[in-house]
Image 1 (tube, rainbow, N blue to C red):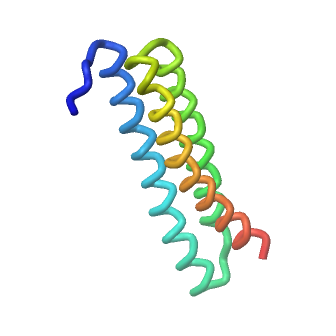
Image 2 (image 1 turned 30 degrees about the vertical axis):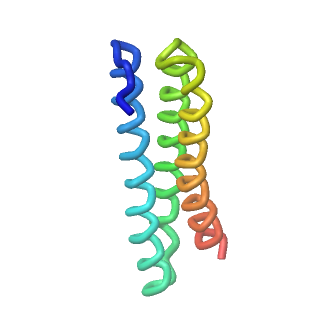
Image 3 (image 1 turned 90 degrees about the vertical axis):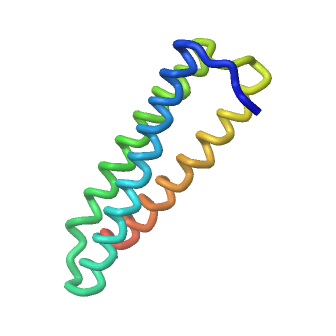
Length: 104
């Protein structure tokens, strides 16, 4: 299925790609933080995960704003909102793990 695209849809795709990049950075950072914690007992890198999750949240709001501003047909917007929330849940879970390690 090919979606009709315009300026708003292009901006949405760009913002969504940035959100996914932020989530990926959060997960990569969590891997490093976990290794550092289990090898050296050092939780300092966990705080980087928490910061990256905050960045992902800010980007999520930008992505959602593109939808609010009318990107795509209304029938598709709900599906995109659900997709964004599921993606953001991944970053939230990474932050939860970092919180557990940081406060252990």
